[in-house]
Amino acid sequence: MPDTLPADSVGIVTPQTYHFDAPIDLACGQTLENYDLVVETYGTLNADASNAVLICHALSGHHHAAGYHSAEDRKPGWWDSCIGPGKPIDTERFFVVSLNNLGGCHGSTGPNSINPETGKPFGPEFPVITVGDWVKSQALLADRLGIQCWAAVVGGSLGGMQALQWSLDYPDRLRHAVVIASTPRLTAQNIAFNEVARQAITSDREFHDGRYYDFDIVPRRGLMLARMVGHITYLSDASMGEKFGRELRDQAYKFGYGAEFQVESYLRYQGERFSESFDANTYLLMTRALDYFDPAYEFGGDLSKALAAASCEYLVLSFSTDWRFTPARSEEMVNAMIAARRKVSYAEVDAPWGHDAFLIPTPRYTDIFNAYMDRVAREVGA
Amino acid sequence: MRPDLEIIQQWVQPGHHVLDLGCGDGTLLDFLQRERGASGFGLEINPDHITTCMGRGVAVIEQNLDTQGLGNFDDGSFDIVLMTQALQAVRRPDKVLDEMLRVGDEGIVTFPNFAHWRLRWGLTLSGRMPESEALPYKWYNTPNIRLCTFKDFEALCRQKGIRIKSRRVVDGQHQNSWLARLWPNLLGEIAIYRITRET
Image (spheres, chains in turn brown, red):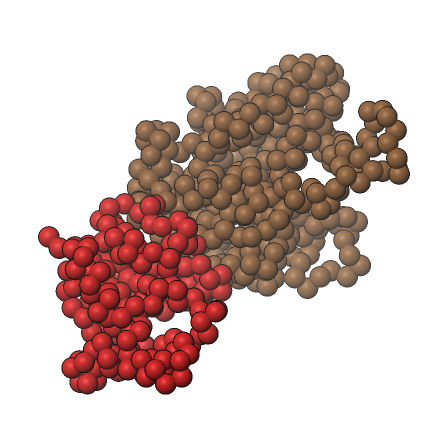
C-alpha cells in the first residue's frame, strides 16, 4: 500500500465469510450439503437496496477486488482500477459485492476445503462447478444480503460469462449486465489451451490424482506450466514485444536452455508465484467451467433463443488485440442480443494489451465504463 | 430540436422499432424513446458520440457501415431505418439504401442537395469546389464523398424500385420555405425523404 491512501481507494477492507446450510443442487447432479462463500463489500446499500452491483471474477480471481487488506499489502485488489470513489464502479454511489466463487481457493468452499464426510480435503471429490452453479450460489448470497435486484452484474472474461448467465437465469433480478472481454462459448482453440494447462497439472508427479494434500505437497511445476501457457493467451504479441522484445538477461547467448530471454524469465517468475498461491484442483475446475459454458447449447446453438428469457440491458465491450476472446466473439453475443430485441450497447476498445486489457484503465475504456455506470446509478437513484 | 429531426419524429409511432444509421450523440433516438415510446439501436463509429449515447441510455453499437454493412440485422427487423446526413459519407449509398429497406419496412434519409443555387453559383463564379453551411469542408478533407442532388437521388430510387412516400425540403437552417417547395432542386438545401420498397 502507498504511504497515504489514494483518495479514490476504498481503503482497508475485510473479507467476510457467509455460511450456507441449505444444500445446493449442482448441474453435475451432485449436491453440496453446505458451503462457505467469502465476500467483500464496498460502499453502502441504500434504503431500497437498489444500488447493489455484483462483481464476478475470472479464472484466477477472487473476492478481493478493491482496496487493501492491510497497510503492508503490496498491491490492491485485482480490479482496483475500476472500483472505488469516483471510479467507474463508484463506491460512493453503489454497494459493491465481490465474492470468491464456489470451487475457488481463496476461502470459499472448494477442492482444498475439508469434506465434512471424510474429514479430509475434497480434492478430486469436489464436484465440477458450472457458470450456472455460480450464478445460483450468487443469487443465494443476494438473498442473504437482502438484494432482490442488482443494479448491475459486472464481469470480465469468465466473469462476463456469469453476468450473461445471470441475465438468462434470473432475468428479473438484475437491471444491467456488463459483459467485458468475454464470449458466449469457448472455441476449440480456447478449449485446447485449457487442455494443455490441465495436462500440465495432472501429469505432474506431485499431483497424485488430485490428492496431493494428503502428501502435504503441491504440483508446483504443473501449476506453473499451466499458468505460463495461460498467461501467454492473456497478452498480445505486440504487448509482449513491447515489454520484452528479444531482450536478454545477460548480454550474450549462453548456448544453453536456461531462462536467457527476459520473456522466459518473466513467464517463469509469474508461473512460480502463481503456483505458490493457487490450488491445482481449482485451476482444473475453473478451466472446465469455462469449457462447459454455452448457454445457447440447449437452444440448438441459437443464442438469441436463449436470450428470449432475458430482460436486462447489456453493455458489451471487447478489446482490439484480445485474441483469447476476440471482438468477433463479443459481436456474436451482441448480434444475438439484437436479434432477440434486447437493449444492448457495444464498443470495441482499441488497446494493445490483449485479453488483459479489461484490467487496465485506458481512457476510452474508462470513459465508456464511467458513462454507462453513471447512467445505471442515476436510474436507481444512487 | 433541429427542425429536420422535428419532422422525422412525427413519422415515428409508439412501439416502433427504429435503427438509426450514424446516430451521432443519440439526440434523436433519445427523444424517440422518451417522447414517442419507440425502441431501437443506433450505429455509430465516433468514440465520443458512442460514449455520449451510452451515458444517456441510447443503445448504440460500434459498427462501420462501409466495412461491416448491416449483415448482422435480420430482414424486416425494424419498422423504420433512419439515416440523417450520412448518405453522402458512405462509400456505396446505393447498397446502403438496399440494406436499409431489407432490414426495415421504411427508410428515412436526409442529405444535403449539391444542386442548391448557392453551390451552383459558387462553382460558376469562383471555379472552386463549393462550401456551405451544410457542406463546410474542403474538397480534400471532406467526409462527404458521395455528393448528389435531389434529382440524382430520385433517379436512383426510380432505378431501384424504391417508392418515395414523401419528401420535405428545408433550407440551411432546416426551415421549410415555400420557395424551396416550388423549386426544390435549386432552392432546397436539405431534403428529408421517406422511402419504402415498391410493392
